Length: 88
Image 1 (cartoon, rainbow, N blue to C red):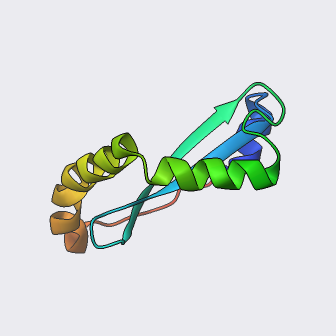
Image 2 (cartoon, one colour):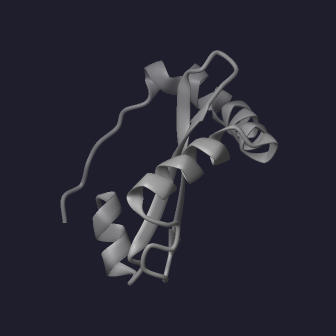
């Protein structure tokens, strides 16, 4: 499901997504949060600032580093992985 579909399906009208980056500034994951409160993170302009601020918080950086360590075995095995998609 796309981000907006997840939010509406779960009756959460507000969501925020922060790109998690490693120390080399490479994108390694996403932090997705949502709210049951409309504009729970403020207007779009405010939410953009919230996402930027979250991206630089010590805890978010620590999460990105932990995610990078957790995903390391997948990167090693990636050439041997076969990814298939099952349509429902």
